[in-house]
Image: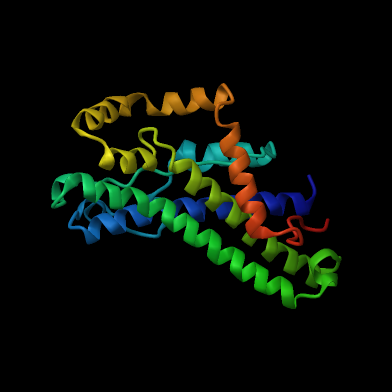
Length: 229
């Protein structure tokens, strides 16, 4: 394993951890603004990554996928506890809490891509694709920004699937009639198995293509996504 490859792994994991933590923090923050103090009381309304780490979803799964150079990287943190009984309208409150995570990831992806696009315009090609310490440093920054865009797009789109317990199911539940709401609540316990089954059966290939198209559009064809060895 070369030093450049090891550095890419470390930067990828930094991007994943940051995106996941900010995603969960946004859930807790919106819940708090709507009157639910649960996350704050339990110490989860924080940007400290240690408070959000899930040993499997935040550490093991991303590390394995990065090392295997998986084309689809994903992970998750411990869900921020939310008590909808504090909300004036529980379903509406959960709608706002749920959509906050994907919206945060979209905002982060747009912000990182905008910064990178502007930087590309003023950065000499010798630094973007060349060798030497200065080029190495510049390419490291672009790799981190680029991967940050990618993981945030993945989190935003994937979490909007209307499958419990993903955020999209909470959004969909708000618009469903009472019977539909009950069905979604009953599916909650099987949601993770449903997602795994869909991935295994290849039912989400179209979604992966959509995600790839979005991040390629944001990064553009000139974005350096590798570090010179």
